[in-house]
Image 1 (spheres, rainbow, N blue to C red):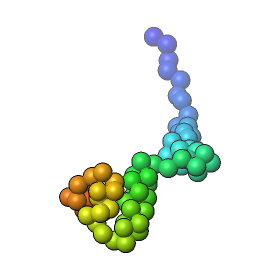
Image 2 (image 1 turned 60 degrees about the vertical axis):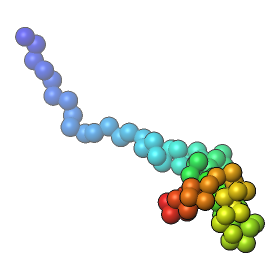
Image 3 (image 1 turned 45 degrees about the vertical axis):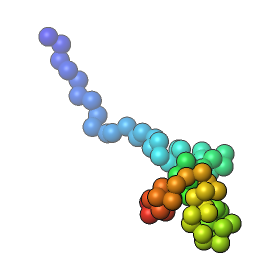
Image 4 (image 1 turned 135 degrees about the horizontal axis):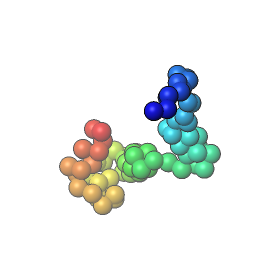
Length: 72
């Protein structure tokens, strides 16, 4: 049998996908779905002067869904 040669114990540096994606999102101006949802909720609440029932109707969701998304 052939002898196995020892490979160096140095770990290869791998690119962290999270950093890459974060940089790419910032560069392209792309927002995550969560950011878009939160922004829509805030704009609807501002437009309705805090009326949650009206904001929910404006967004096409139920009041319960609005409250759940606000708590997230």
